[in-house]
Image (cartoon, rainbow, N blue to C red; front, side):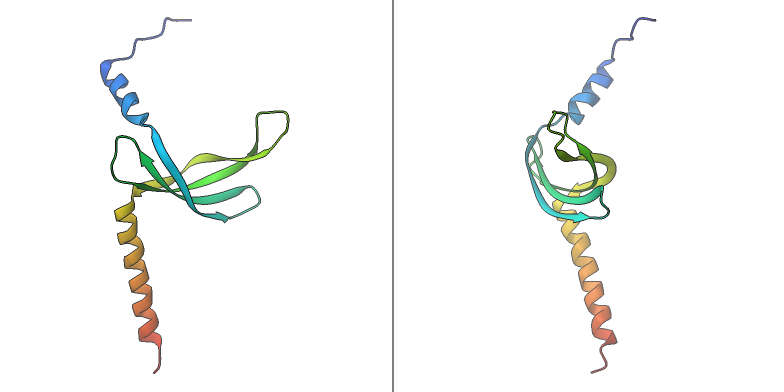
Length: 108
């Protein structure tokens, strides 16, 4: 087996950025899509970021590692994360567009 290459300073810096610590994670909503997966809407706060993030992610059912075989949900790579303020702008725009369309359809 060939010897492993040493990581460059750039690679080390990238790993430090990716490993920021989660201070709190609040699950806002869960929707069961199928028997084995759910979509979870969460608010996440990181220790080095003053702005909360909204995470919308697909979780897949699996089994715990202990002998009890407890059912757990594991996060997948399918999902997005955005600033909470941007999420509110997105939801407000959709809400007002839907409301406007509903009002224009009303035959009163």
